[in-house]
Image (cartoon, rainbow, N blue to C red):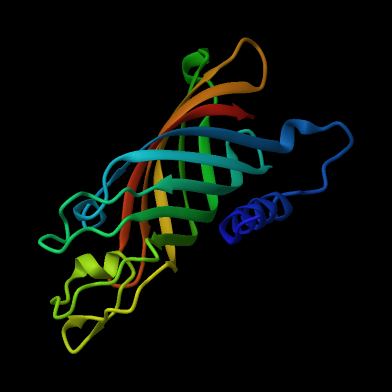
Length: 222
């Protein structure tokens, strides 16, 4: 198993362990679960270096009452590089992904005017990692001026020039926060709901902050 795969399993394990709470026998009304995926749009400054990609979210938590819940979530989102951002130097082959573990508060209106439609607001914060993998055979040419583009790829600078050491992989971790709105449709008379949401995420990543808006579609329980 690769190192990044092990990190993913560890992250998912933390999400599950952090939100396993003692529930009365067969009382699942306090349990909340959600899973989905969608499209992530990067905003500036991230949008200057990354393009639109997909995302995946899974979460579990505790319903304090009918309207309020605490949810722990794991999110993965791609951050594909925009072509040409470091021209005229030839682009390295790279893969950039974002991983996050967050704790969030959710306030919901379960049934709007007694209908099957609902509305909720959600926000919180936690840990974000921008994980960068660069072609091991790529070395920056000599005398390349330093710029924020190179920081995005994980390279460092010395005396205003890009340090030419080959970069194979690097994780940039930082704290961050998120907030947004979602809509739900109750499926039949069950506790299952289809949801769609949009949330703004901001991570205080070194040099270049990470700013994205994932639009996610999925299934919720409670």
